[in-house]
Length: 77
Image (cartoon, rainbow, N blue to C red):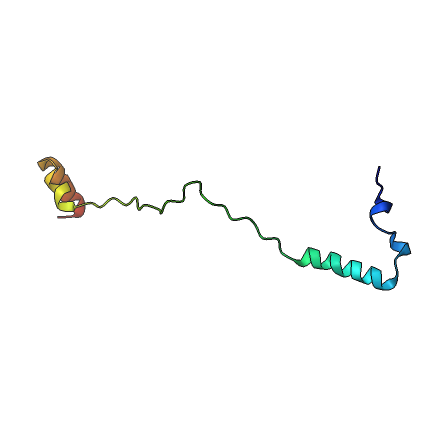
């Protein structure tokens, strides 16, 4: 079985230059920002506008006379 001592030399056994380079590498790896993976939609179709266009004249024509009177009263007319 491998041991931690098999992977790296002991810190006490490293020379000064090796220690500084090790510290520098550790700091550099912590400073670098890890980019997040972009989330892609499963379906790459263009977004379709879901806006509904309303024509007021068509809506008013479909109202009963009582509804038209109530609308006029609420509008202040």
